Amino acid sequence: MTEQKKPEPLKGVKGMNDTFAPASGHWEWLEAQMRELLRLYGYRNVRTPIVEPTALFVRGIGEVTDIVEKEMYTFTDKLNGDELALRPEITAGLVRAVIEHNALYDGPLRMWSIGPVFRHERPQKGRYRQFHQLDVEAMGFAGPDVDAELILLSRALWQRLGLKVGEDIHLELNSLGEPAERAAHRAALIAYLEQHQELLDEDARRRLHTNPLRVLDTKNPAMQALVEAAPKLLDFLGPESLAHLNAVRAALDTAGLAYAINPRLVRGLDYYNRTVFEWVTPHLGSQATVCGGGRYDGLIAQLGGKGAPAVGFGLGMERLLLLLEALNLLPGEDAPDAYAVLPDAAALPQVLPVLEALRAAGLAVQMHAGGGSMKSQFKRANGSGARYALVFGGDELARGEVAIKPLRDEGAAQFSRALGQAAQWASELRTA
Ligand code: ATP
Ligand code: MG
Image 1 (cartoon, helix red, strand yellow):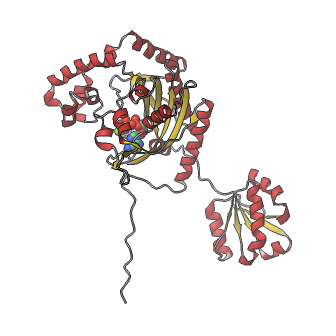
Image 2 (cartoon, helix red, strand yellow):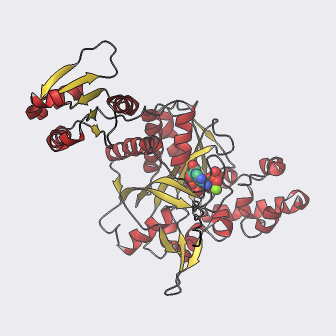
Image 3 (cartoon, helix red, strand yellow):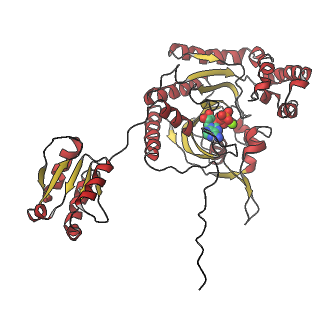
């Protein structure tokens, strides 16, 4: 007889996470908070594919960016040769969809989407290869009012989650101006960087002539002083860009939201103009940016649509959850209301309809399955976190009743309820 070899278990992809309870409950809670807040601001859900043509991101995000140069998961569809990519961010796909469905025809749109995105980065705490973004976008609005609305919406989210704004998380703001202003700044920046060739790292030298603004986005500590003293785009803004920035600032001031102007804030994507912002936390080490966004008035036209202004932000769900965890702001575990103890498996046909009636009345009931002694069943009942054990013992069932034992309240007396009136006492247990 040949010996069967036990197969090696397969492992998940590096940098991509599995999430079980209770952590999955934190995700559900956070998403529910976000959905409710977005509804209050009039933003509506959009769902687009996770796979898009590679060309969409190359054109949308820009060829000389970290994402397109080295982080994107691309592949050739074996069946038809199409060049495809797992989306590294959500905005480009939304813009593609809006253009394809002519969705701006009836007026501007406020939208949000949530889901996985993929970037081939070095995995570490707060940096993964599959992560999740909440993406919020307003398309068809040109004014600074909507920039301010989005920033205030994000502040409202932090407040709702219990974060102290200005302390646990703070706002940085900048303006990237318009293409002509950027061109003038770019020329000055190239001249400056050329004078300091010897201080540039390999990435910076390569980007010096292709995308010098990106050099300012470097994470290389050795280049910080150089970048600090570089010509600032803010000094090249024309009157309209300045007026736009000042209007955003005035709105934030009125709303009592403090921010820091960060002239080096350029964001990792090429498509931004005018307003850019990031929400940064001191609690997550070098994965400090929880949320970032800005205006991208040129992107819709650049991707082949009828030109329309737009502004939005992307929020890293994992980073936000890490931050909430670090500050002890996550909700407690979601326990069932009751745990059904079944001393006699033969009674199941009599018990099941009662459990169904309780659940139909909104009571969360976890049923003991798999038999076992009363002692072991009570151990499970306690471990479940339920507030009550419903004991369907032989004597009780013979009387048409169930014994209800409080599990969390020391000294509270056990009581009985009629099996046939489950709908009535379900609410008693739910609100108790
Ligand atoms: P970073 O500078 O940290 O790489 P980024 O500028 O590349 O961030 P964006 O493209 O603006 O990030 O994405 C929006 C948000 O998504 C970020 O602010 C961050 O919270 C989150 N994020 C980005 N990359 C990752 C990742 N690899 N893993 C987890 N979250 C991420
Ligand atoms: Mg990045």
